[in-house]
Image (cartoon, rainbow, N blue to C red; front, side):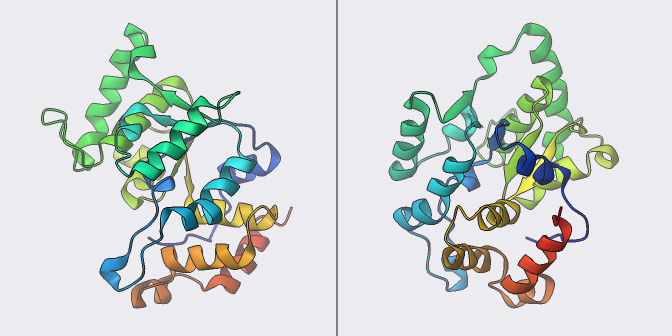
Length: 230
């Protein structure tokens, strides 16, 4: 996945001003990354929790996931962690349920889903798992007027960022990438800098192609500081 450092993201800028906004998460924000196919050691859950999950839940009080994403959480350690956040008082994570949609909202949701599913691997007839969480999440938040979808999936992000060109109906949704939240944790001194660097390198600066396209950690921080100096 490419790191885009040309222009500031209005969504991230808004979160710096007010982190108490609803952010809907894709599954890949909750599941430890595994790039072992590239001869890199996979993250175990405890390490991922310490480096990533605990810090983001510390700074953002209004996370949400769609029920379809919740159902994708197969790893028991992830599911147990998410269940604790859901059952906390007050809840630290809410579930978007399609049953909460009015009849009119369901019609709009279905129309948005029809626009975006052909651009993905999801088939509503088969109701296969591929990209289902992203499709259901994006359709729901678009109907509800929720602004932010946080993901580490290039296709899901393109559905948002190319909404006008691709006519996805997601014009009012804003994408938040994992590297932007990594910087947020760095800037707010919430996460450990060394560990955040490790996570950034693992996700964005691991392969030869990524090293050619994406900046190394120091350059990344320098450029982000320039974009969000104010």
